[in-house]
Length: 365
Image (cartoon, rainbow, N blue to C red; front, side, top):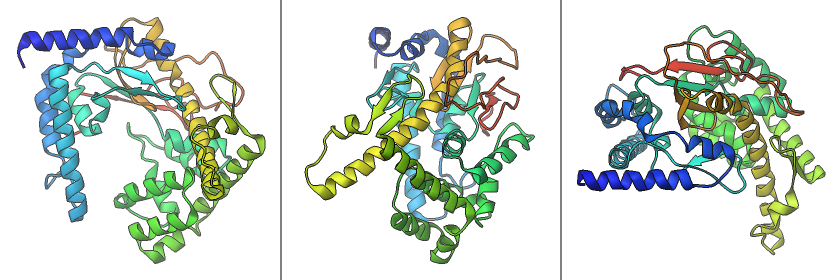
């Protein structure tokens, strides 16, 4: 593509981003100048090398033909995304979507890159991440003491810059070894947001074998999660909806059900169940967004503090300074919000805290 055509394309994309309407947070994220991303273009080659190495022998253990195909797909997806970003520029365009409090990128964007590739590309940026966000939110909202205890121990007892909550969780359900992390993580979130017990057992048996799957669902951790889920679903249906943790407005089941509600009784019951699950997800995501608000508050106050990529429970930032600590104030605490807001980017502030990682020119991330 000719240089003049690229310049014109990027100019049009910037104009579209600036004119895009939406919540104040979205407009703020879209206000970051494309020039902010110029510092990262020098790392394109490293990012391409990182993408090309996905699934390569010596970088990832390929346990099966299925995983080989999966890794091959991720490799090509990352390479295609990098090619498009090289043509169009790195600046993401954010948007809000119906029935979700989250902010999503529009079209091809940095958010579609694998974490390892993003880290290679964001040389010199900071990565802020809410530690164990969704798990900790559900453990608090649903009052799951065993989950809270393990998460608190993992966060408060960890001395390195990277928190790994899945090691003690896997140990608690008899699955030693991080090779089970991906399958167990998928199982936990499927259980949390409404997959039937029958399908959960089937999924667990496929991943761990029938004997291990049966033992897993007898552990106190999994029993507590499923009981907590049932209680929350029941209460939500009894109350007829949820109170939005951000706006304070009441979102009714009826208003959500009206969207494509089927007339068949069986399909209608399934639709109600799906609606309940979607509201439970909305509730957790809204708390997650509120816990991320200190980042946006800081961005409004400090012209050097720029969010270069928003990722729901984390973000990449540039600061224009060499300071190692970024203090986020939380002057308000609304009713129903978790009293575990982070106080600094690098110091433990509760179960939900920020992990701050300085991304340097290292392809080993």
